[in-house]
Image (cartoon, rainbow, N blue to C red; front, side, top):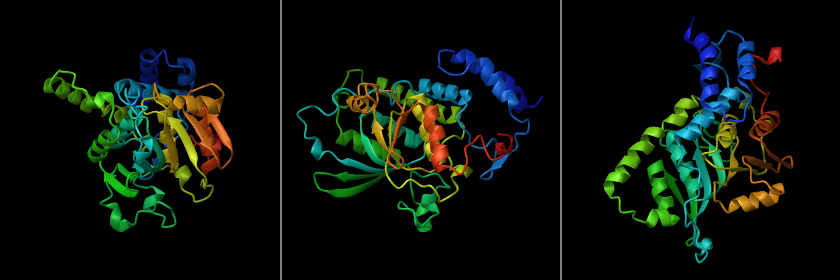
Length: 329
């Protein structure tokens, strides 16, 4: 029996025991879904072998949950002391554009800090290798071929409100250093007395676990899928996503936004975020996320599965699992 055939039996059982507390379909239902898939798995997409991008399955929910556990202390809770009441928020920089790939490790480290600093990004722009920003000169965020090779991700464009000047930051290290300095918190200014040794240990742990989400989620959120290979039905008005980095369901939505090549505004709503009050006022009492607002269709909705189906139905050429299986659906 091949490795793929074996994994069809083993993986559902492993994940069922590992994440039995996650609200998802039962093991029996997930197993039956897997067994209903065709045995042929050598389907080619964008030059790669493997199953085409699809609506997230129970296995996706579980692996996304494992990815969140691996980074449990990062990108979840707002740092204490952010935006003290006596500060002048108007002097703080505005995060205008973030060029990002969901599956990218450096991009993830920046998004984790954005959650912890409780920031808003006016526009998150998917920048996968096959994104339209590198192919379509009519795209508002078009990057010409001459600039693509030197286009380092993540890439953040900010406006420094005290001067009104735009500044471009490239690479996780530069962006993190800038944001940490521009948005100081109690935790970033306090010496706990542990010395350099504990900081080095924490740094090693952080570096080690930072690879886990990409490994667990394989190629999800890394490339634009075939369902997005069309200029039709592109959003012309803002799409807003209330999200935080460490949430497993928010991750599923962000992956699909990358795969459909859809730019969106990001509102951070990590734990202890004051923006949860804003979200609660919009929803009528709930601060559950992800939460999507699409001004193009006057749509407001929660629940990751519903959001993902909506995005494919509204902005995709078809709704997965894939064109390979469409004849049978």
